[in-house]
Image (cartoon, rainbow, N blue to C red):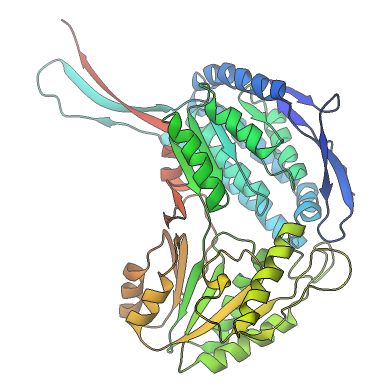
Length: 479
């Protein structure tokens, strides 16, 4: 079922075997070893860097219209291979097959949007200050890119970096997560089959610290893009800062959800629970701290708990499964630790709270109430299927609590009041704000964080600009 030929893609060739070290790719639902993934050597990294420099010279000279044709062809191939890619994604990551199909659809949307937007990377024409003087700004590709993507949405997060860089005219060395290589290999194969020239795309798997340090330190790379945890983001940012290289960092989140007392409790609880347990809570913009007005708190908790208890958990390939396993043993251990800490501080486990029996990295959909304010789960990014629900009384109090963490990636609120919606939108300290809705990341909308949640933007025109350099040109018609 897992029929994927894993390898590195360097200088237009697939590489595997030889003296390279390998690691196991594991199905998180069964703990079955799916394949052995080859890891990059020092020479592989050096070859990828040299290839990326050559590829950049080719791709920057390729018109935006030609780039769009090739990228569209790649999107078409991914659509043709959608079912195969989705099944590989579910086997590697554990998410339900329906969610995996949806992620592949977002990959296609992202590539198509970026391919078109690349033709609209306009500059500005300044008003002349004297006859014969032309002054303008132009946008040009920044150069070879080093990009690092995580395992929670391995397909779309690779595609987001890949598509924006290619649309801007950059070459890219992409390092996906070693836990989920197969779907990324499939995406790169589609671009290769679509006719992307050799050197424009290189893909490495390997020891994260070795690969990142080599790529960022090299004078070849001119831009760094990373999606992942805050500690790793800080480290990569410091490495890039030593070389004065621009970075885009989409880092962790700890999103508040503020539910006011004028809502349809049943409908809002259903929406909140559905979003919380999506991808087993392993979503950077996941709802994680629920603040519910005291007038509706008990009713909301009852509805939320009922939904959590009814969620079908299992292998993502099984019919009707809503939530799959955590992606790896590390997340399972972290989840157990967070719940144990909350319980030790007096929290009530209103639903779930335990690892599920049998094989696989499964944890019950969990609801915690009566939390001590010092509980770790209220301060550390949970990235797990655990919802913390707390009551509040007034607006100022809840906004202080909602913003009272080091993260500022996403924030949500539910209310029927237009005035309150406007107030809370301004009061939230976050880059991605949802009012009466949970919107996933979109190809044409920027996502960014405040505080420790990141630097720069991904997605939308702002995300494309991250791979472009603005130049000013002043030219006289004659001397």
